Image (cartoon, rainbow, N blue to C red; front, side, top):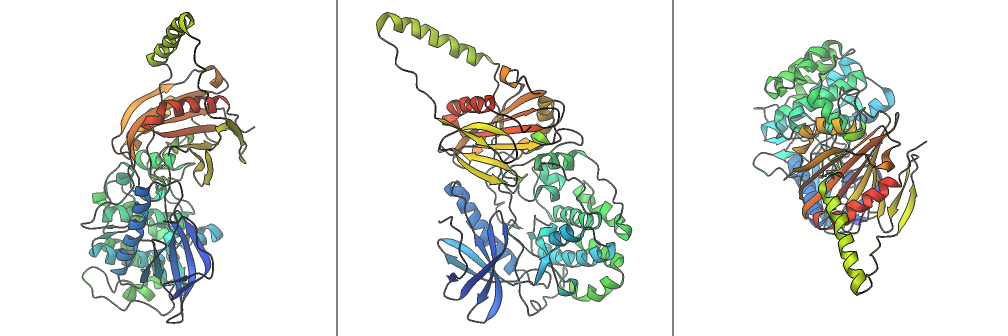
Length: 532
């Protein structure tokens, strides 16, 4: 399967022509296009693949894309984006959808800030109505967020992006160790590795509405890992500007899923809070609530789903006031749905840390001496194998370090990645709000994070005292192994910080190449220079 993205003017199936990209996310692009047979505008979602993904991960993305089409196609409601067709080209699926002429709620909030409780309630009613139809048919969306709610003319709200939806009776399709969904909107039970249910969709709806009236999500932190930890461990701050929506928000954001309102109860509360705005759309919005009859697909002008949501990399979390630094540890991507996404994160891909002060290094140092003395009496020693050549990377954010030549640079929202030829990678994350003690912070976060990795096995969480780390306030490694898509993986998340800047070097390696990659991590850490 090619990873190259399409260009404007491309024709699919001799019928659909791409005109211009209108959105982009972890799984690919959304294009404005033309159905040349029916002469109507459409949205076309393109699946794009990173060249670094193994074959199994590529198949997961391909299957997820098809699931999105099937999930949305079986749901007919004015507040759910309509899927018209699925085209297979270049051995990858392309989804042809209704083109919604408008912008996402996320774009509205970014540009205009918090919205009035009445308007938010009116939008929320329509999303609740869409969820009612989905839940009745056994579909859990799993990624409710402002970016997946499109706002068209007349404040018509349309729910999009069923790419990670879970259909009743189908397998929970994720990459190995991956946390699915956008970290800020994940319910506590999902952040701890639980399964998705209608109640977890209701939590995400609550976070979305909270953000719409307050201007920010209640658990937003510097990294996904910190966000996930806050979701699990901290109380929801009371909304200050929610007005009539406050009682509903407090119920939707109950950490016990059994105590959250049903979608029908939420709809009734939203209609009441919306006042006249709600009355105008109430009848049509819930025309397909559970037990109701299907209504015609929708108004004439079709439109695009929001940019594909993804978590192609780490999962993260962190308690208030503690290091947001060590959060972005699980590239589930990775995710990393997102993840894991939990992130990226994610949630996300697994990792492990090394214990630098154990007996093994001592044994290794004594053995070469013995061998060397014997060799002196017989034949000249063979020349030592040298590691790969290193090249200096000076990052645009200010830090610098040496990396092996041949490791390919990739920039993502959740950090800088260097992909090694053996299938591993180094992820570098940073924060302006580091915690006081790297080791204690890793220990605090392990419980919430480890459940996101299949076959997780802790190797150790240890403070580091190497001389090349003397300039930092504290440093620690979290090492563990896990089951990756291509076999057993070994990883270490190395955290270190100054008074005002924290860094994490997250190394993931195939088990067979661990020793040499672990040695490279030490070399890269020793060469590291923080931003000034």
